[in-house]
Length: 446
Image 1 (cartoon, helix red, strand yellow):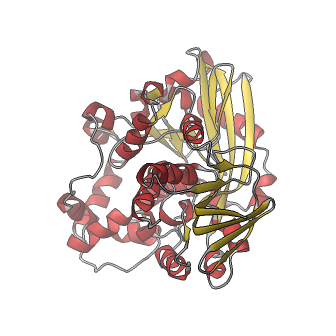
Image 2 (tube, helix red, strand yellow; image 1 turned 90 degrees about the vertical axis):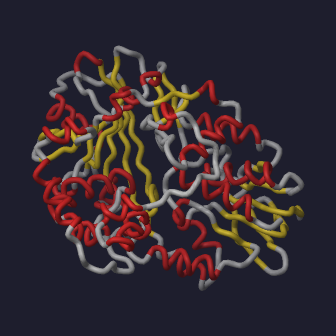
Image 3 (cartoon, one colour; image 1 turned 30 degrees about the horizontal axis):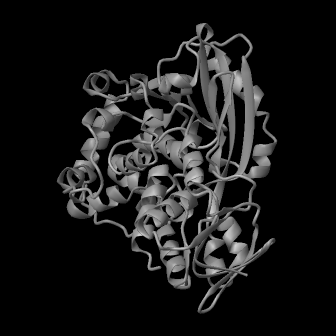
């Protein structure tokens, strides 16, 4: 038996950031982190080969808004000199429609010249004239159709949702995925009018220079894993590896049973994903955890000679109406030039998502498919200098209609001394995860 004030389950960015803030804000707390793997980091994985950074998880963090809390963490960890910021090319993003790439407007000049100008104009007018009362929750597709029209939704919003959640826009909850839009709608019916009237309160985090906040993304010289590696180093005295959690029993104390022993604690914070937690908790909590679905993904990282591929943007997205397994492509070397030698181009193709089951995804020949896309879209005729792929079953949790009710039910049915935390509850981005971890560490009673 190991007696602790707190036991933290999981070894990804959620667990590591939460543990870091517990150590900072609750310095007298005695805690252990139980990781079921021989390493930490979870889905954050940066692989370096031939001076090229291959990302298999998150590839960048936005520095604006609450992203400044992550920058503050970076500064506290002594990693500021390792930061790299997105190149100006990251402003250019494309959408793939009818076998062609089209630039998504990103400033007034590109907006005026855009072939999508008519779609934008119709969408804005429709929303500004909106008079319908808000619905408590609905799909993103339903919400966007009501405010901006079906054409705008099919071209832009569908592909954006695929890019962030790899999700089905017909099933995803607008209240969970875009809470600011729902909030704006409540005040003025029109989303545009509501967004203009939102009063941003003073932030409770450090504000960084405007030149930093304006960057699209930031990473590190050796990739995002630099952050989880540094957190692991900071928490090394608290981490126990290869501890698979078998069950959690909660009474006046929490008993966490693992394959290597039992841990008794006053409280337990589990950052294990819903598909694991549902098997080690009891009803009614397990029933709600089972309703959380995940989308599978396949990733293909490819390197080609720069002289054989002309592309000047962040990447491109593919709307579902194109009926392609490819969700989009990210041109990593255009975003972070430090991640790839100047004479090469490094890119990542993202395939699958909620449009496919894991079994269907496994049958796809990703590498051949990506090479076909490279030929058709970029007229690439040569051979890749490097190509590697990975398939992930439970890649991204899906926030379907009613998700906020599920989260509320999970919170209400969790024991007071067993708290659940993770990207299946409060947001899938690195910013969402780290900010929620910090807030919980500050508020938890230990």
